[in-house]
Length: 589
Image (cartoon, rainbow, N blue to C red; front, side):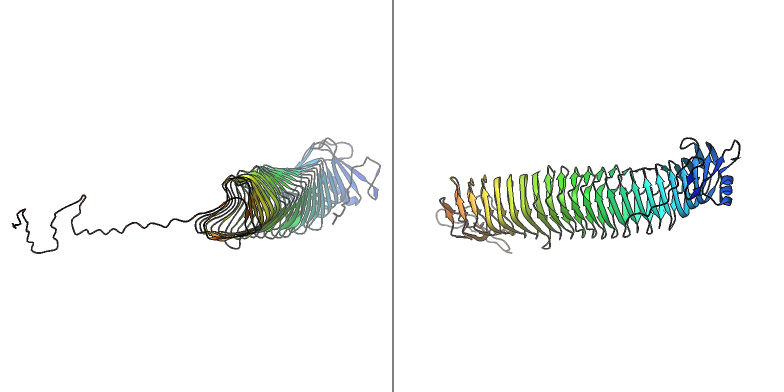
């Protein structure tokens, strides 16, 4: 919905038409002069009596006045912008009723609304508003205020139920929010600089705002905040060095963010408590914690975004978050995508590289779907852990150059892989503890340890799995794992195509082991081998019976001998003992 167009009254030379009729001109000079008014207040009073459009021209100087402007009036300096200073030690400086235009003035106040628009429209151009412990500009309900090419120091511009336009302005060191858009207001902020706000740079609460082509820096909280079902549009902005979020959508707020860069924030963008924005073509760089953070039932759609050098997690969905991420690029930093604490997410065409930890993490009852994902040069590429409600589906993806594992499934989590390729690393696909891994139409190439591994009580179900060039095993089961592998092939595995150890069980059906080295299967006798195709030997591994150690009974009431004893007579627990010795000649002594 476009903003209503406020009537803008511009300065005009003497004798020319301004507005609907001729403009009455008034000259203000504290030094006197022909037909000069000594102060601004007296000139405004004269203009009000005539009831015509008025141009009040003010000579450079300082004026300590409280101005009440009514009707169709322009206040303009006769010197350079900033040469006229209107101030008061306490209270309001300018109250506008009607159609008011201020050009080139400096307005300074304290402990109040320095400038207030109570009715009609107000335009301030090339002006400065200084507010100490107060509001710089207050646009009240049903008014329209335009700020253009102006400077606002310390205070904030407050639009409450009003329409507003802010163009090419500079907001410095606001003690609150620099721009507040509340209670149904509708404001556009364009091409402006906002820095050093104690709270937010722009806050939109139960209102609508567009923030375009702006730079925001050094805010104490989120640089741009939308709350209380706000509608916020952000485009082509630069946000840097903020203490909290670059952009935050909370409390069911909606809107969009396009072409915006956030650098050095705690979180690049946060979406919380039912908020649901659309974020496109944005970059979140060097964020100290997370780049994209969705939690507490936050949602959102993120398209073609970049997250570089995130201090903790590039994309984080937790505590009921539910984002959709499409075409995202993640580079450097610690963790790529983490979905935890009963959150969910769908991730498509995501590229990740050069992380220091895991690329994809799904923990603690979370659910995630990954499609067309490419991961390169990370220690671990996929990690899941948690209860049986923890699930991940990965399809049509490539995992390359992993230091440890391509996929690790632990706890009671469940993972399904379809059309996934794992290339160059230590361990391809692994499942352990009580977790389950389902593999369909996948391949593992050039691993130093094992292509697919089941351990603990893990369950591995594989269909059309191909492992090529493992330096040890193509397939391995150990402990009490269960392996169900059908129509799969293991090629050029150095030690064995498949190795079954411990008490692991299951079956291999319609599988092939090809190559020129090692054995086809190291068989523990617990895995059914059905229609195995191979020219390599199958080696039976018979488990050795466990030798029980001899039973040792220690009698601590009798004597203890540390060497062989012969011809000894022993007695204990007797009241009377008769000792008799037989001599060599047969006599007794």
